[in-house]
Image (tube, rainbow, N blue to C red):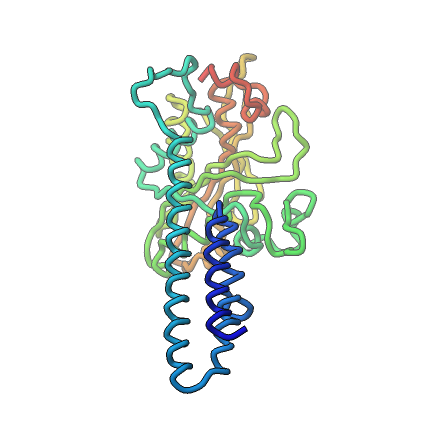
Length: 341
């Protein structure tokens, strides 16, 4: 078969194949079959042109280019046709009748009590000049532990408490939002030359046995403040103001000495809570003045700067506010519980 007859046969075959195309996928198959540079029918036909010579080669070459252009245009037209049909089908399937009577929901939605509590605390924090930030839930060992003066042998790194990533031992799901402390000091301190006030609430993860007061996934609200003159009075004042904003009244609190690697001195803060059986002291949060090593990691000179930090369990605070007796209610999806708020 000579070149002219062969390439006209390819043209006829290609146009016939395009007529049978009814989807984008089948169009791609035709494109691969005829237009592929290596094994396409058109490419293989064009290679036969080398066997021609002289004026015949020039004439046949022009004819081959015209056929190639005709087939490319036919292919593009088919693609546009399929695209229009596809969009028309979507429009018909997803059409909205704007004259249809609006059906309103019979059951109004509710802002989750945890969200309500979070917004209230954030509003109070902003009112005191705190930046409110968010941070990564999956983080490196450095930010979750090492930068917070928690060495490798510390119990907080125990795999029974922390969810580590398989085959990536230097990454874990954060067990506290304190992973934001050094990150935010480095971000806003201008290399340790500027005071910082930041709050950073978020979700944390621990390998806990679930019961009425423990969950493996819960929320914390933490904040830090760094300046040249920081003392325990500032710590207590900020916490009491946040609690007042959440509960709408003055809250009685007390400090007990405790140990946390990232603060020195460290305290447990208790508050008086009434769960329906009379007021009682309940442990609510850990706090203290920032450890010098943590300040150094954040870029500050601990001889010139001091800081405070504290972390609240948001779930427990909201439980205390509304008298909720079981932490598992928050994620139960039970509308009878949510409708109360």
